[in-house]
Image (cartoon, rainbow, N blue to C red):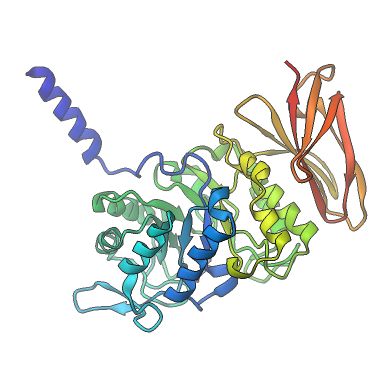
Length: 389
Ligand code: GLA
């Protein structure tokens, strides 16, 4: 009897204690989000077609799961304070849309904001956190991205913790994606609050452009997360923002580099292009299972830049089976022969290892001490190095 009481006590103590839903993102979340390509032009028609395309294109088979509507789906609150989706753009309502996404074997994500308004001035969740979380749960939402516009003097940790508790109280497991652009250094405090946190401002569809609000191309965002590797891991990921692969600002070589680096970073892989009209090359990049396996490796290590010779960088990610993934990254406008040395991966120089090229899908042979190859201009080579037993 005593044991039973102890069990009930411990059980309720654990589950009554507000927390994030554990274990929802043991590997970096994969999916699609409307913002990069469609901005405010979201509708249930678009979301359904994207869900269809995610299945038909092979993206679902490659591991993409979440279909996430970003800003602009909401238009107001009713007199009870309930959030109202745009009835013109989402005439069937969010529950029906979530049901459709679920019927495809996918998961459904939504966006709100910790402040009084979203970044596009739609109603934010401030003061409505518990009500909104209950509403999302009743619709069948699986993923919540929570932005940081119109937050005035709010404290980030307190605000995001309130929404975490609201989601937990609503009782439906939802991935919680924090988006304060790294302002409060969420990597220092958010491990028990969310499953991923934006560590940067917004990605722009270019190689290295920048605007006056710190939004920037992927190479610049890469630099901003490079030193944060010790903070990322299973169920708590650094998020350098969504992918621009398949949008018009990067050529195919640059897109491969972008994807390779996001995989070596163990970044969330959230596509941001139009999945309904992808070129074959875009599809090949986004569904490269060997690159995705590096991103999704269960050890959950963010890769580390082990060498930086100006335009030429070597990135290494330790994998669960003891092998290493390596990206040779050439930022210059000329092709370059680049190498990785075994010591840079934490291996003795005398061991023999098998090298596999993860873009050519080809075994390159056995090597000792180092591997070198020609890396295209603005390009990357991604390999897996497996020591001989
Ligand atoms: C912010 C976020 C973006 C996007 C927009 C929507 O800029 O960082 O990812 O959600 O808001 O308004």
